[in-house]
Image (tube, rainbow, N blue to C red; front, side):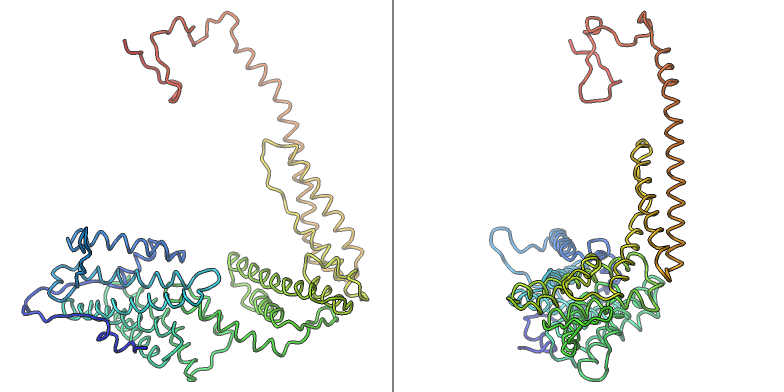
Length: 496
């Protein structure tokens, strides 16, 4: 496999020397141009398909405006050389061709189950194409662009070379060198220019930092812990998407190594043996995620991020349960194994009430815990969202919520050492339900009392003589055309 630093000679890049040295230098704010295009056309939400299609459409417009098409009937490849670049749009063609190849590779990388063997080969081929065009873009910018454009183009090409090596899982020294080269350029450019450009350069430096740290980790110069990798993975930005795909693979490998020493699952003093490695990995993943919402940094998480973490926790436990139930099918007639697997399966919130009756000896703390979870399930009843026009339905829903809350309060009061915070919340919910019931009842009575008044008002406005009737008889308006699909007040005279 050819090395990336020798790709310029092996990629059929033809750059001819120009005789004229007095031509004006072109200027392209590469980072600002790409960031704007990416955010406006899909990458704000990680939609690489949409961005790739935008790049294709943009290239089509550039080729047409420059009259640089490859022929209509017979394809005739045209090469962009130094002598060809008489307009800055020729450099834009190279830039968007690189972006199209890169976004196509990232599109394959984000497949639901990950790229398979053939898709991965295609993905790496697209990244090679991106390196080819980025290298040509940098070389032509060095000849035809100003100093800042040349620097940005060189950093962009280094970033693409680093991405290729990063995806190939080889030559980490060269990948590190390219990422550091790009970082050094953006750090320097971040000291000059307008405020927007400085911010963009600093953001790109922050996005490159995780990839640099990961390369150092792979060559043994840095020892990243799992918690540090997770913190890096929480950063946002298109430049980090390739790193995040690698991060999940690294975390899965770390969990597999940790799962080798996990032989049982402790819950309420009972030990459940775990023999399936996949079950161990899924449970470990869920436990790691639980630390994120129960640790010291949990208060700083937004509601949306907490919901996303909960979704991942439920998904991990669902995977564990799927493995357990597959083991139940293959357990045969071993009753003790079945009982242990059933107990492990039911250690989830939805099945806690069945845990006591799973067939094995129940403990007092398990019964108490199941009752506590039954009480906490009352908090799933919140004030229902209702329409004001449907007072009867609102009254019924609030009454149901009041009944559930009263039952929960009675059970909680009978439990020794009950949580005072839970008791206070239930009492507040009980009072709120009572208030809303009174409001809906009173509002419904008032609305019923107004019905006869409204009816009598409508009757009093009716005319028995028809003097106030606005509509004419059909025979009286034969010369007027009223369209069926339009404003009812629009009328026009029928044509003769």
